[in-house]
Image 1 (cartoon, rainbow, N blue to C red):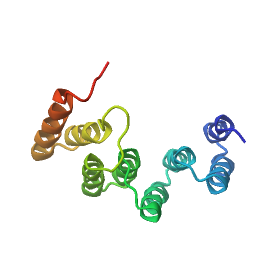
Image 2 (image 1 turned 60 degrees about the vertical axis):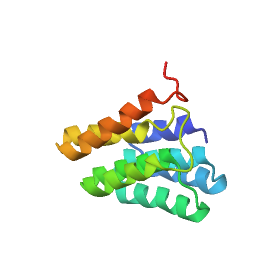
Image 3 (image 1 turned 180 degrees about the horizontal axis):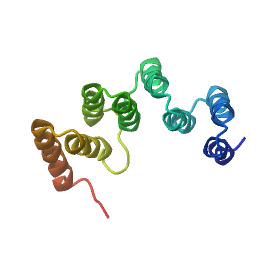
Image 4 (image 1 turned 135 degrees about the vertical axis):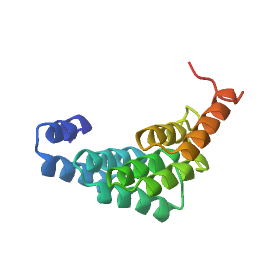
Length: 143
């Protein structure tokens, strides 16, 4: 079943069937794409603890850290009203083994948004400093 169909089921309210198909796709072909699709499905469905465990299990099993997975795991913790664990996950994303093609901007942006939604001067200064370093990095080019 296509990813589009899986998401259509979730959007139409058939969350159980959509997640079942996402889970089957992931179990049949455990790739980064199916991992993220299932993790996002869990987030969509409000299954935040399951989403957190999903990303953590993958990283532990394969001994790999990816900024995208840590960012989404942090979103799950944020949704569980655990801003400290969310921020810790996003900070881990700063030093992940693998970052996205944008140079790992996702985690600093999440830290910055978190510092605004739950005012924290220390976190905001840290996030702004990290974002400034990303912007000034000559190896990164933003369009």
